[in-house]
Image 1 (tube, rainbow over the protein chains, first blue to last red):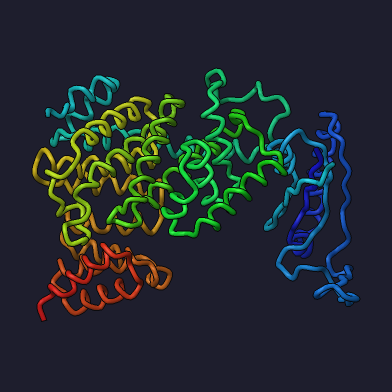
Image 2 (cartoon, each protein chain N blue to C red):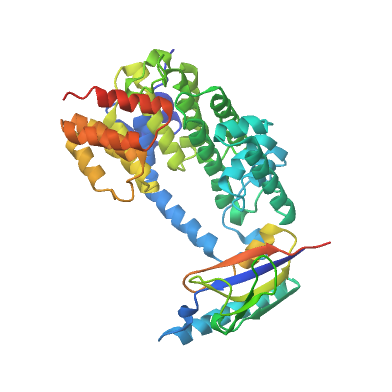
Amino acid sequence: MQYMLLIHEDESAYAGENGGAVMEATLAGHMKLMEELGAAGVAFSGERLREAHTATTIRYENGGEGTLHDGPFAETHEELGGFYLIEAKDHDEAVRWARMIPIPGNGAVEVRPVWQE
Amino acid sequence: MQFRDLDLAEDAFSAACEAALREEAPIRDPAAWAFVAARRRALDVLRKAAREARALSARPEADDMGDVIAFPDPIPDDRLRLLFTCCHPALAPEARIALALRVICGVSVGRIARAFLATESATYQRITRAKAKIRAARIPFETPPPSEWGVRVGAVLETLETALGIAYRNAAGEGETEGLAHEVERLAALLAELMPDEAEAHGLASLVLLVRSREGARVDGNGTMVPLSQQDVALWDARRIEAGRTALDRATALRNPGPLQTLAAIHLAHAMRWRTGRTDWIAVLRLYDMLLAMRPTPVVAINRAVALSRAHPPEEGLAALDALDAERLADFLPFHAARADLLVLAGRREDARAAYEAALALAPEAAEARFLAAQLAALPD
């Protein structure tokens, strides 16, 4: 069964003096995760997203046309930074993989089952 | 009815503990031995907790065989799997209790709703949603693997402890909440039976038995709450006290102390008033010191302050309460109720009056409200 792992992180962790090092460490963590997924034979895909300020959101209220807004959907301290789509046998296995996603500082990883027929 | 004394307890401990017990526990009662033995292990607990925290945050190995925590063959009992599934941390805490009661104990939705002071349809929806999540997210019906054992057992214990709190939210123990207490007792006993090597499971079973032992004394004929120290011990259930003692023995024999065992030891120390006619507040205080180290929460700090005020001059208990964050606790009823009690002891009537009024303003349930109102009325002008 497929699960989407949504990565919410505080982009400011990558800014500032130490930002470069944090980014390197995080990317290394992702490389490691992808290696382990591969070694375990787990089917997956994933992408890193551009910064939240590059987003455009189409908002709908009671359906209708939808209006364009500058910026991401959620105005929170953490932004959606990327995702993985993985194949896992059950919820707990998906969570085990999700726990391996590196999150510097504050953030969250949401584990959402994908609708299946 | 003879209470077994330290002699039997000593059988369960190593020679080192025995020596310490003889030296340090002039009062020979179960609370003292539980305290001393556990105190010696307190550092071990903290070290173990730190180790487990590190293990949990470490990357899970694809192969579980290398895990440090050895544990027995998987228990094929379906009831244990059900308990783990119903109490999965991925489910909301109230949903866990409702699910466990419905699925494992077969309690009707109506009775669960009344215990939660919720509507039947809201409770039904909560249970349905929890089952839907289990299905949609494919939460497995399994006992957890070694790497997750600690967290998952903790979730089950937390669920049952919360359920116990709900059962006693209404001190008058109306028909429905009495039923809930009975189910919690059953589940706790089941858990201890299915996990005989889990000290905290026996600790929980002990706690539930000891809390239930006082059911008959909790509320007087007028529906007014009677605080523990004033309860008529003749109305206590000696059979449950003894069973609670036995369960705590089993827990401490495993030499793995934890908050539930410490809480049970506190309740057992109170239960000793049945035999000795007095409460050993110094033992209670020491146990609260230990509990506070394991569970640094306002509730524990407040209860410790009350014990402090009984073991030492009440001003010390008040100082301990004053050290807490009054702003954070402004809407916390137990804080005001405890303050009022200690202020009376310290002879500060006007401040006590204000504290009782603050407590009553937070709308306690009926039996406690009657008690607080009576205390307020009894203050001399």
